[in-house]
Amino acid sequence: MCLAERDSLRRYVTSILGRDSHAVEDVVQETLLRAWQLAERIEWQDRPVRMWLFRVARNLVVDQHRREGRAVPVGLDAADFEQARESDPAEEVTDRRLVVDLLARLSPAHREVVARIHLLGHAGEEVAAVLGVPLGTVKSRAHNAVRQIRAELTRGDWAGAAA
Image 1 (cartoon, rainbow, N blue to C red):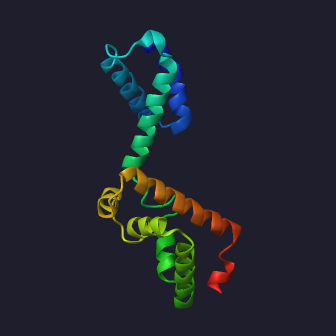
Image 2 (spheres, rainbow, N blue to C red):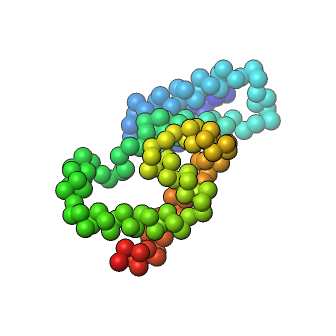
Image 3 (cartoon, rainbow, N blue to C red):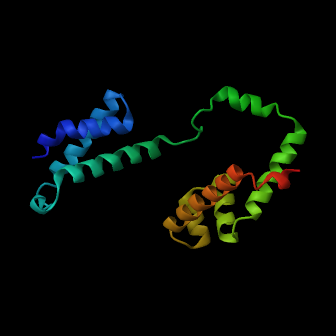
């Protein structure tokens, strides 16, 4: 039953990962392995197999992306960081002022999470333990705070802060 979906699963994973055939095949094999391992526990008659397989494959791709980390933002390479090191001290002051202003616009709870994770480099689990909140709350606060900062940068609401 699951093997009949192999080609459609491969096309779906290719649409997510691109033409990296090795990565695609790894995800497809892992997805089918999990289906085989759970075959006796899941009532397949009441569950659409294709959608289940697609969801498992998508989750595997997301997990793989998280494992690989995102230390360097997409579109930047080492040369960009070298150039940043040679910046003008006046620009550094302006940038710091901008960051301080944007952080001040966040709620105290969101600011604390962003500061601990993005400025101090603490792990989410560590922040959750220190603040006494669930890890999901820390992740949510970090996500929402970064989204708010990006939105304000996009709108240009910060222009007066840097002047």
